[in-house]
Image (tube, rainbow over all chains, first blue to last red; front, side):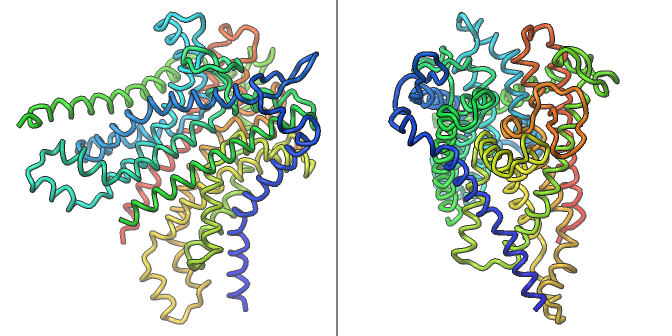
Length: 286
Length: 283
């Protein structure tokens, strides 16, 4: 009797995660819904985001989508080679003592709050970008991408390293016995065997980059323009919500539009994370 | 034979890349400590801000962040630990368990600003808590729940199966076994994992932006329905919203230092504690 009550109590508490996920969908939907009726969803399919205007408010989200996309691509281009290289080095080449020396650094980097990285970017990285590339302003997509790459690196290194280390020893031994060098074994046997884990790491890193708010808000300049140039200012979806939510009247079309952006973000990260989990499951099976 | 020659070169290249990541991390920390340390004083830590934070101290922001962290763990810790006990000790393979796991993964990936929107919609508006410590803590609790569940489950799984079997064989019920033979050996591990979640809650800005944080409020809160200042949001305000940001640079560095000292201090404590525990319980 009592045993069953205890079991049910634990079961009830464990369902909290399901309830929270459902509530997130319900309440984002609830606040976003009015937009469908009033300006209509087609209003979001436009190339100008000007939600505050005396003449006509425009809710085109293309510039925000391209802003997020550009920054994500750049950040991934920077962080993937560095992160995968780091993971291979730490797991295959570094000695034990060296590995123990690296760990706290990666943990520290993962722990730095994004607003602190944003602040560092604003004060130190932005002036540097401005000087090196001779730009009128250092607040560019590239500056944001550099900081986001820093945030994605711990995720990419930790998960890739785990994947690389779980490659069975026999694979490497067989390759070495056939006369392959250590270098050939690492890049032609170990890394391909761990590939699904590495891809999962990259996708999780991407999820983190797309959802990041404070650092991009502080260093990308926030101009809602459609561009694919790393040296221009862009405005991401996350930064738009953070910057504008404080000033909108509750229940207005602008307010609902911001919730729609939240829903888009939710679905993109959800897709990336479930795909990553699939890939992880595959390498754990091996 | 060619590859034998280029092998050391490539290894050195990879070493260089890995160390340059470390150097960047070290540079960030040293930069903030170096420029922030001269600002730290009694008056800065325990004084009230003046002129929108351009002068004076940051006491309300420190107190606000500590209160938010306290509120967050009060909610998230029991829920997260109990969820982990269910998943590790009771759950059988099946649809329900899979749904819980999928929910945890989903939750772990939700962007922090989306948690902010959710907290605004549910706690601030629907429950009518307003922008308050209560709404902010609940929002942050939802955010760190997956971290607590996953790390607690790991701690529970580390307890050897033989301890459970021995207890059950002696006639103890399931709950007695969990209470007497599993929890005593896993609680410290569950707490350490959870501390990492606390570090995250203390440093996040986006969720509290919409649910609790005040731009400038130079007094201490009286109840959980009050707004508070918080360290991460205060840093954002100082760095981007004041008219003459360059003039308040020392204040910005000071606030950044206090924030990373708090977050990294908490994390460091967790890591050291975890390593000691690992040595103590070796099965």
